[in-house]
Amino acid sequence: MLEKSLSLPALSRSKDMTTQEYIYLRLRKAILLGLIAPGKPITIRGLAEVLETSPTPIREALRRLSTEHALQMLPNRRIVVPQMTPDRFKELIMLRIALEEHAAHSALPFVSNRLVDKLTALDDQIDKAVVDEDRDQLITLNQLFHKSIYTANPDQVVMPMIESIWLQLGPFTRIAARNVKELYVVDYHKEILDALRTRDEQKLIAAVTDDIQGGVGHLHADALERILG
Image (cartoon, rainbow, N blue to C red; front, side, top):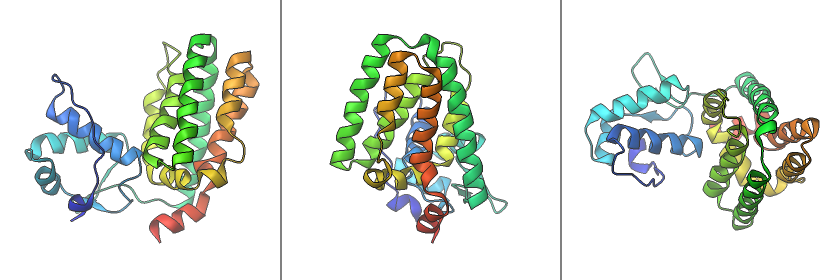
């Protein structure tokens, strides 16, 4: 069964966190990290055995993930990470660029020097993850880097939509991380940081777009072949 071989990432659990929330966050992280391939079945019973819990909190966690389009409920009641096609992949990349350009533009007036310093330190950790070839850390820190920028805007409402796309692109983000040394000839995070420091809106939007296109957006049909072939 898939669940027996599935590596769910570790996650600290606070005392007030419910079982459903804990399971949801662990499964969500596994999808974000690309640890579950598209089309592979996930069963409530199998997860209940692995996680040593009842089916009820697992069922609710899976329902939440399906509303975020991270999972798909098939007519035969199987639960899977949705399959990908070249056209769907292209659409997700275009949507990611549009939403993140908007998020960066809206956040810029709220970006402080202190936040830029924090992002610079975070980018140093990302550079180390690249050198260490630590894909899980690289993906996690990269998403935190972008999220920290976009959520600088206290009135933003776009982050859930962006994270939904990150979830759907999870397997391909992992492939991009595997090939990060070849894909990132230019470190676009450095360009993003420069744009934030100088409050250069056009440079920021261009750098965010280049970062997406130069990473997961660079994979296109080749990624489909490698992950589904």
